Length: 542
Image 1 (cartoon, rainbow, N blue to C red):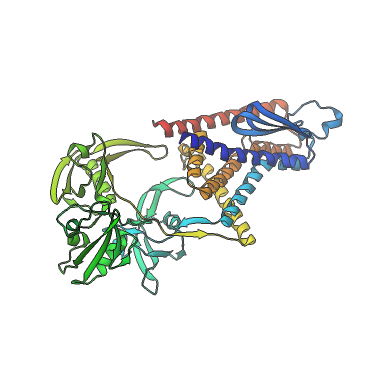
Image 2 (cartoon, one colour):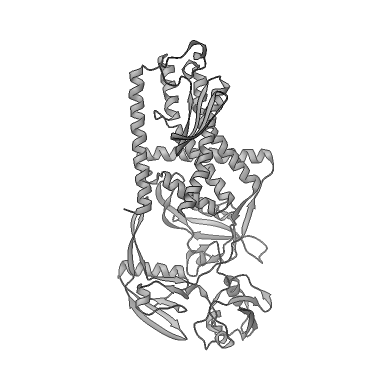
């Protein structure tokens, strides 16, 4: 992972530095300013080559780069024959474009990357609900697994991430849903009460965001669990880990569909369930009972979700004798219907009682023991410390692939508009976030340095081309926004001094410039200390 982070850091930051510095170089050449050195990296040069009048080089510290322009230092003595090509001899508007060229090229580069993503086609998880957890607000509102959300409060959506974006500012609100349900001709209208959870606004502010509790983008796959060998399925030879494949000869894609088909079947109906066990297919034949039993009670076929895959060594679960293949049933006498519910009940029991009574099934027998959940402090650089209670198990929960949609546009006008629109949106969010940071609405702990950039870059490389390109575009915007900040030493600081010069009608004196630059360097050093501290906290905690 470390090597991947380093590789990602180089593959993303390297091109962004080249793009940024080329922006300065481009406008310098347009206006006839001599570029003496173009360097990627700082410090000692490890490679260089002279092309024309510019020395192109790689330097040992890969945390940026620079373009050295003729006469960029005020008061520098130059021969008369080349003095006209120095930076300080240029009109203010020309110097503005030379200074702003770096950030401008970062913004343009980000827009071009967003445009490329549109042309390549971005695979997104569709707004179809893979699973609705029983007993949650989503289930009470009438949502079902397989439903596709078309609108929330009149806002159309096609991607699952748009659900979170729309609900971001709707905590504890009654929202209207338009839902497409398989087998139902017309869209359904439903109302659901959102809940609130800790999160962040678009600008990085700590806040409460809205969520529809109980919906997941993925369904459980067909992996089954058998905890009673004397059940119908157990006597037929079905074992935990086998895969449900067919229902009355028709293929089933996931456990959600299996439970739905069972619910739709009439009492007394004969059913044939095909289950893949190794290289064999076992047929489990049964008649749906009229006493209201669910699929598991009628046949012994459970989802593998609450079956234990592994217990951690010396964990509370291991100490009370839980082992692989056991099916968890209840916490403190209350039945659990999903691993998410199990985790929630363990957390609440740990917070309120410091202990929990666990019930489980093994070979058809119900066992029960009390344990003390393990407690650990979870450190988040932004949200602070929190307590997490666990019992030390890995579940056999496995999921099916979600439905995806591919967003692809070939119309050049649409591609250009969308690319630049995304660039402007992300740029504005960066600017607003920085402003909120200065007034304390956004924590300085959200800032990150080389370690965080490397981590993000490495993760993006492991997730495919589109994620990598998206990360590159967002970091390019961040680099552009950072450099237009009115801090001396940065491009924005130079632009600020141009404004001061325009107001005064003359440049600042040498001593004044030295003071301004010292202040700028101090601010940059403070910023570096903050981001490095945040990086170290993320790595080592504290």
